[in-house]
Image (cartoon, rainbow, N blue to C red; front, side):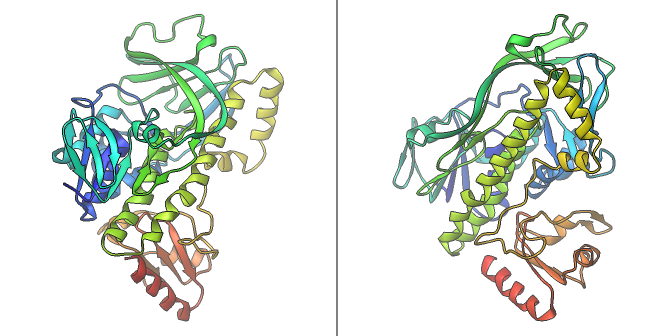
Length: 429
């Protein structure tokens, strides 16, 4: 029925389906529920993750239903600011955005809705695809985007590597009007750590550790939309691939939400894998798929470690709060901390050891459109005759090979090296 079967119609599954569809891959999405979940869960994406949505065809529409978020504050129990990590919140492409997940899912369903089969439960993985409670579906590849309790992962017998102790937290979403700063507040309190923020419009979120609920109800005067207890885990799957089956999103990795990267990590998975699958299905070297886990696993672990660092700050008593105040005043610390969730890819088969390699290339708006859109969905070499000339000159290179997921694969310092980049682009395209 399709080249690729995606298991799970959450944001990660829908995004990878949209990406594959735009790359010409036949794809079907299977979802055991009869309809979208409808309640908020993820609320934040950084600018790089929004670029994945742009590649999936909904960038402009997402910007219309989201708002720029000005950063993160670590605050003392009395509300005093211990440290602030600012993010650019204005303009057409903010560094961080807040959104209502059901709004995002509606946009994604507009892109892939006719490819989703609702109310279909996967019951097994066969040699040629998947078995379901309805029928067997042939597929070249299966993508498990079925969440933290992934049936596919359990069915394959894939276990986890644990990176930290689980924590029980209460998450409350409410609607109303409260006078708070537009960024995210992390309350550093050994007894009652908490997080609170405005999402979009009149939507707000509070998160508290189960054994540290506040004495007063902060959402008084509003309407509680959802209240749920979650176990925040820090773990990664030991294998992200088993033959023709790949794990994405929470099926592959889980971390505390303290840096707002849960969904963003899943979207990075989708962007990393989609173009590689399309390349192989067009006749490219299947070995390219071996780079999915080797590239994304270290990034996922780095994101989890960054969240654990913020979790360490959340459990701060007076002494630790003093350390946070002191360290936050060191020049450059706040800027560096704000970039922790986006580590560069390490050198490997598709990432050279040259300057800029492994990092995301910049994007900006031009009179002809966004530069990502002008690059297209194939590997591209950008040089000093292109819109990227100022960026290239600033880093002392003459050209860069940009992958479809906007990662710089290689750079050239001399004119003669540009031919090498063009040959590499042809091999990856």
